[in-house]
Structure formats: C-alpha cells, structure tokens
Length: 401
Image 1 (tube, one colour):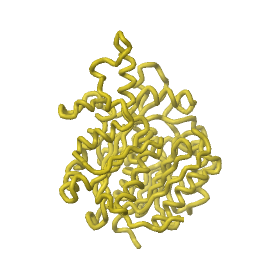
Image 2 (image 1 turned 90 degrees about the vertical axis):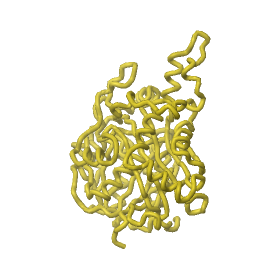
Image 3 (image 1 turned 180 degrees about the vertical axis):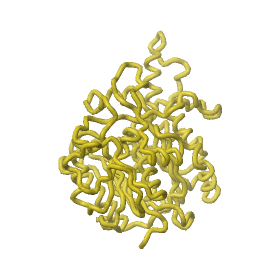
C-alpha cells in the first residue's frame, strides 16, 4: 500500500455546469434539490433523451485576443475561468512563484471534437474544411490545455489527461506528484467537456442513454444523461493557504477488465479507493461523505453500491450528484470534486437525486434526500471506461486530528 502524503491546499476552485455558473449557483441548486437536466435540444438529429446543457454558451464568444481558439469547449472553459476570483488567484500564484513554476493539468474526453464535427458538416466543394475552420489547434486533443495555457499565460508543465470519465480526477494525482518532486510550486487542475454529436450518439449506440432524466442507483434505472461542465482548482502547499480545504490523498487503478463494462467485483474501483485511504492516512470510518460515480448505468451502479456497502460503516453518507448535472464525462472528476468541497464548506450532504426505489445493492450509507450534517472528510469517485479509476480524498482545514 502507498504511504501517506503531505496534504495540499486547494486555494481556489470553481465550476460551471447545467446547475449554473460559479460556486454559489451550485450550492443553491444542491440545497434546493434542483435538477439541471432538460429534454435534448442540442443534437441536430433527433434523439429522445435528457441533457445537462449550460445555458447561454452560444452567446459567449471568446475575446478577440483568443479568437483563434474559438469553439464550444473553449468557450465553456473561458466562462469557467472567469468566476469566483479564479483568474486573480492564478495571477497571484504566478507572481509568487513565477509563471514557469505553475503547472497546468487538464482532463477532457472529447476536447473540441464538436468543432471538428462542424467542419466536416461544412466541407467545401473540394472536400476540405471551410476557411473559418482551418485552425489546426482546435482539431487536436490538446486544444483545451493549449487554450487555457495561453489564456492564463502559464509557462510551466502543461499536460492533457484523457482517460474517459476519470480524466479530471487524475489531474489531482499528477499535480501532487509534480509539487512533491519539486518540479513546480503550484498547479492549476481541472477539466472541460461539452455536448457534441459524437458523444450523444456514441453512447446511444452502446444503449447507455436513458430516455428520461437519469436515476442513479434506482432499481429501475436505464442509462445515463449526458451533461457538459467546466471546473478548475488551484493546488499549492499548505503553508501558502493554511485555511483552505485540503487534498488529503488520491488513488488510481486500472483493471482493464473490459472496454466499457466495469469489473464484476469492482476490482479496479476498490484498488483506487484503498490507495486513496492509504495515502490520506484514513480508516473508512473517518469518511463522512462520498460523492459516488453513480452514472445510472446498470452495472456501474451495482458494482459501486456493493463496494460502498462492504467498505464503510452506516454512519458514512454517500450519493451520486449526476441526477443534478448529468454525466459530464471528462469533466465529471473536477465537477464532482468541487461539489464535494462544497459539502465540506456548507455542511450539506446532497441527496441522491433521481433515485426513488433503491437498488437492493445499496446499503444504509446512501443519502436519498439532502441531509444537514458536519462533513470534515469526504471522497469523490470517478470510474472510467476500460476500468480506469480514480478516487480523491478531501478535508476541511480545521478537521479534527
């Protein structure tokens, strides 16, 4: 098992999703148990499903200096950066450490593939991309990180992580290693994924998309609802922000059981969970809340519910928040990390929205409705295709020893 690590401070964080823009919008939506999903009004071809769409994104073009990066994914990233004082926090970090000592580590599963889809829909008479789409950087998997690096004028290590649904959780692990090894002094981590035809119809072809709003851990669940989101966090050593919430640890694992189906006993998920507890120096009973991956797919929820039931005591609370936001794919890790940080700050355990008739695998740990309670230590699970799993452990700065 890995040894405990030194915690890191999360000195700034923010998120944008179907629930709204910024931390207060998300806190209010969680408190009100308000679902952000709506009937699909995104895809050009008809597809009966529900999506977690960010309102107003079409009317928010990038500023002129960044226009070469114009696409839906980078628009959403720009919205996400301009909230909750995040840009100022990054600028302050660059002043303290130097722009070359701040890493940028972002997760995404599709990057700006929506722009490439648009270009193919508008091929010219010779079969080439239209003139306004001849911008190679937006047709590459590194589009998101390249754009954010330019927008933030960062000069440190810049990395794109694309491991499906665990992408923007795994960036926390990469950041901790870079800071611990002295390669950088701070790291901007996060992730962005936007709705696109490839994702909607790809998941539909796998028969994983529900025709109704998703119902995580419900006995009658029948698939996911796809959403879009952007989220970012700034990680530094604890002495730089002693009152900020902490990243206590992380776990990563890949069981490679199947391209799209989890290991039947949750082997990779359990390995990631155990490693996160070990790096954090935690016993399971010390965990107050777990934000579950909980996509509302049949096998994923069954396996994760069984893992929670056999690992944690009844006092630990657990829920999926994808009934609020939809499954935001490569952005799910950071979005749900931000939601988990909100539970620490506001002592609100979000209920498992959409779940009405619990799956028999669910134990007493599940919070089916909102609960007001003190949360000092919390986990966030992100389990991706191919058995690529990550688990993050967070804590309040003033938690008991």
